[in-house]
Length: 287
Ligand SMILES: NC(=O)c1ccc[n+]([C@@H]2O[C@H](COP(=O)([O-])OP(=O)(O)OC[C@H]3O[C@@H](n4cnc5c(N)ncnc54)[C@H](O)[C@@H]3O)[C@@H](O)[C@H]2O)c1
Image (tube, rainbow, N blue to C red; front, top):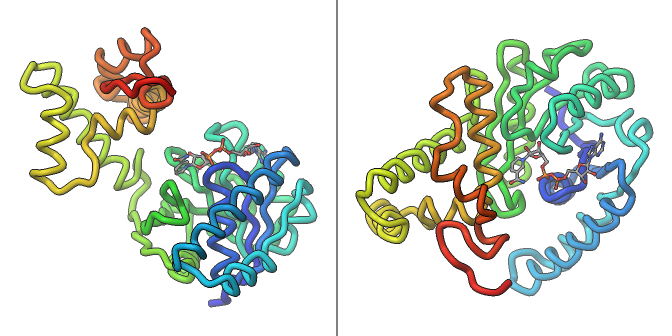
C-alpha cells in the first residue's frame, strides 16, 4: 500500500484550512486550493495566528510549526494543484451540484489512482463517485475545529475499495486522529446521528413541558457528563443551521417526521438563531 505524501485540500474555509494544516503537520506536501484568492490568503493568516497560539501554549514547538508551513502552499489553480496529489480532500460548500461538478473536474485532472475524499457532513460519497475508478472515492469526515477534534469518520460505501479506506484511515492516524470506519452509507454517519437524536429528545421533552432548556442541559451535563447540553449546543451551531440539517434529513431519509420541530421553526421565524444573533434558547446579551 503506497504511502500518502502529497495532499491537496479544496476549499479554504473553516474546515479545509485546518485539514490542510493537519496534513502539513503530518509531513505531507500540501496544497490548499480555493476559487477565491481572498479566502486562501485569509485562511493562511488565520492558521498563522492559530498555530502561534499553539506554540505559546506549548502544544507544538516553533520548529514543528515552521516545518509544517514550509510544506503548505496555496493555489487557485485546481489543475496545477491536484494533478500530482496522492489524495484530494474536498471541503467546499455543502452543495451537491457544486461537489459533483468539482469531482467531474477532478476526474480529468487528478491521477486515476489518486484518492478522492469528501469532508461533507451529509453527502455520501456514492453521490460523487461517477468518476473513473470509483474504488478510490470515500468520505473523510472531520469535526470542527479539525485541529482540535480527535475523530475522523471514514465511510467507503459499496464502491470504495478496502485499500482506499485503509489508506485514508492511515492518513488520519498520521494526522494524530482516531479514525472510525462507518461500514454503511447512512445520513449523518455516526456522531452527528447520535447528537441529532439527543437534540430531538431534548426538544420533545421541552415541548412536553417536562423541563426548561436550562434544566435539560444541566441534566445532560451533570448526569451524563457531556461537556455541553443540547440547547447550548443548538445555540452554538445555529438554530437555522439545524433547521437546514433536519430538512435535509427528512429529504434524504424519506421520513417526514425527521424534519425540523415546531420549536426550531418558530425560533428561526422570529430571528432567534442562537449565539450568533444574541438569542436562541438562551439570551447572550449585546454582541
Ligand atoms: N463547518 C463545520 O462545522 C463542518 C464540520 C464537518 C464537515 N463540514 C463540511 O465541510 C465542508 C466545508 O464546510 P466549511 O464550513 O469549511 O465551509 P466554508 O463555507 O467555511 O468554506 C467553503 C470554501 O469552499 C470554497 N469553494 C466553494 N466552491 C469551490 C470550488 N468549486 N472550488 C474551490 N473552492 C470552492 C469557498 O470559497 C469557501 O472558501 C462542507 O461540505 C461541510 O458539510 C463542515
